[in-house]
Amino acid sequence: MNRKKVAKWLAAAGSLAVLTSCRGELVPYAAERTSEFLTAEPVILRDREAGRRFLMETVSAAEREGRQEIVVTGKDSSFDTLVIAQMFPGVVNISKLDLGTRNVNGETVTDCRIGFEWRGRAPDSGENTVPGTGDKFGEEEDRAAWRTGDVVSREIAGKVCRFRCIDDDYQDGRGSYGKRALFLAENVIRSDVDSTYEERILLPFGENNNYKKSRVREWLGEQAETAVPDASFVYTGALTAFTGKTGDGDFADSRLDGLESHLLPYQDCRDRFFLLSLEEAYRYRDEIWNPEGKGSSYSRGFWLRTPAYEVDERGSFVYGNREYVVDLENGCFRQADVSDVGIGICPAFCLPQA
Image (cartoon, rainbow, N blue to C red; front, side, top):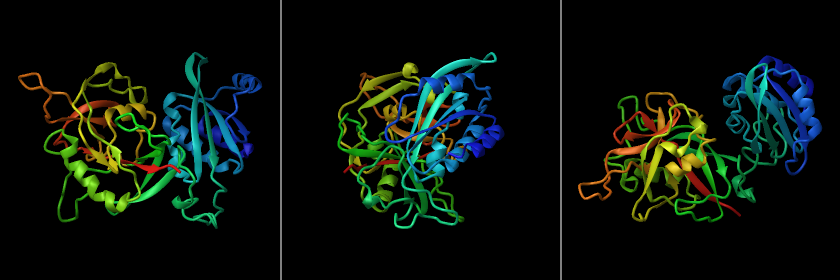
């Protein structure tokens, strides 16, 4: 790691970091490093943008051999490691470990250790790829196994979208494992995805909150033939419905306290290209809050495949007009009307592991 360059960047970003390097497996944080870290003059990463800028510059300057680690102090929101996967397709095995909080000049801050490694070497200046490795640092067919942090590109509705592996041992909606790696889109597909200059075409969830018969599932099925023909079919039936919502502004700290689950009858439904369930969105809550494309009037959040729980006069579950979404503006899981075209799509698919 070029420590002089990074030191300048640290000053520009307003941050404090201790840089370490190791080969092979992630090593425990050494006591002498902790001492060095805790006695360093504290300068704090104040916000997400400062953190993203620091991480991009640090990864760019990092050694290409062996695993690299940095320890950063800042506010929780500043540790946005998604930017590494977004900006550096050749960086894999991205990790983030919370080392705890401490008080610096009367302010509570968090110490976080972030690790990563380059797949092969990085491209030289002027190169788009590394000679002999294929597109984006290695062809998919050459991959022995997928690992969390790997990124692939697929064409969706005429546009290239990046998908990042967020789970290299995916457990489907029935709790079954099957040597599959889960990839989630790094951007929200807007509800006006099919619009043209002549006509505005908006994509709602569907006529009701039955995902199996929804318009979004139909649309994803249409894309799957060309976008993810190599993806595995996985179980996507709705086995649970919910009432309630999580707290506004909780984002990755969301808790399920405000939600109540209700078991549903078995629903036979399998897909190659699909939406996350509410349970899965919660499981991967550290990964889902900063996709590209959020914030427009057609992508204030993205749909999940979990229905809101409603009953008829006999107390039996019925499909209604409320479906759960990831609300990217308010940082919560909540219900939305199935006709709401302000909600986009953040699709996922699974690739088989070797």
